[in-house]
Length: 111
Image (cartoon, rainbow, N blue to C red; front, top):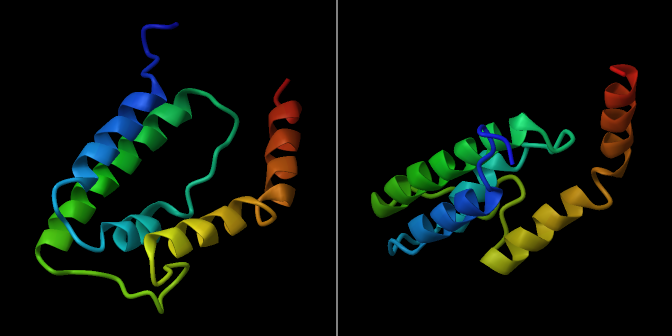
């Protein structure tokens, strides 16, 4: 483990903890804010993506506590957290299959 490595599980734990702050609609706010983030090969960028995700969770809790929400008719948001997650899954597969190949090609070109 390098000194710059931060286990991704810490980011997930922080985001989950923030989600238990009693804020309604946090799932819709989170889905609307970080869905476009892509994995680009497991590197130091993952740490930054984790930081951004936790910050999005923090911001989403604050907005949700103020009664601000993004409705299910917008973007990939579903009527339930489960539907939203299912929609996010569809973006990952089959949606990102070709994207993964492009990312791999870019990384191979750097060698």
